[in-house]
Image 1 (cartoon, one colour):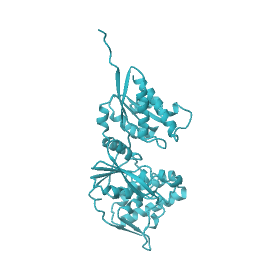
Image 2 (cartoon, rainbow, N blue to C red):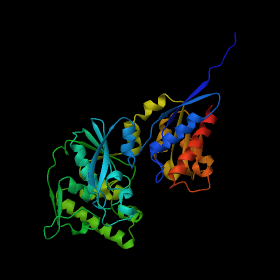
Image 3 (cartoon, one colour):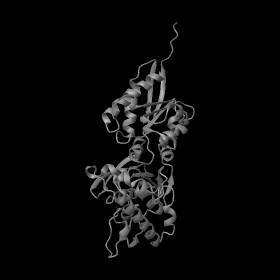
Image 4 (cartoon, rainbow, N blue to C red):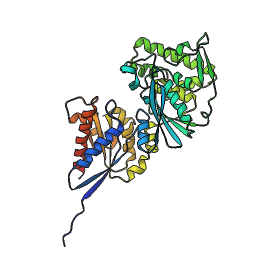
Length: 382
């Protein structure tokens, strides 16, 4: 009788974040899994796919991949044009995101509008979500095109901002300083719904680390526009205090108030609870249970660097993965090999090691490289 050794099966959990500007988290996971499954050796690689998000763009897609249903609704885009926005809903929790309602990627022809862009569409999506009677709404704030302090969002949720002549203002960075009076209309269901801000941005609304100074230049604001936005947001805080928000000034200094051009501030005014985006979504997507059935965890993001060490998704994934090997895949890595241990990483693969071309804006090239990397990882595991 001949004794045969059973072929080896390696169970992997492929749980990456998006590669910003190139591929969604789902596309990254699919490409890596295709490569892993094609690997040859003394066994096979089994892949479980779990695209991740941290409260930024891609949060709705990640929730849908994990079993939420997708609901679509037309909202005002960042400059008022109609856009189709998706939310995710599982009967209890709704996930609404800034990026697919009023985000930078939705600006017509990619033209930046640092003063005119509005967060109104995000508020309209929240209003749509409220119509589904959720117990809670998760507010994913990454990728905004505006720096309006959430004024636009609030206009969709029953707030009216008037100029000195009594004319209603359309929420934008440009109109913040024109606010003379604020009127509130109670919105049925809003006060009874738990609001969760899932974000890892810690900037306050104002000051040297505030939304205008740090984030507005990324949205096209020059020095004069940054100064105007800062002055407008100061005025906005004062007017919200006059409108009855006694903690308006205190909340402006709160960690995360400056996220998404100050939408984080408006969410705090509404009583939202702020939590770590990475950890919240790992819980929402049931990461702990999913990783327990796997031998190896493969994670990644566009760039692995100092910010990754500070708590971005790959760091949270590594922290939760226990003693099992953790492999990271990135577009590039600015961490030398001797620092991999700070994230408990067994190995880091980068697209930059596989090509001399810039893959950051080339989805086709990125996909092909991820498949090659997946195949190489699979071969190393068998």
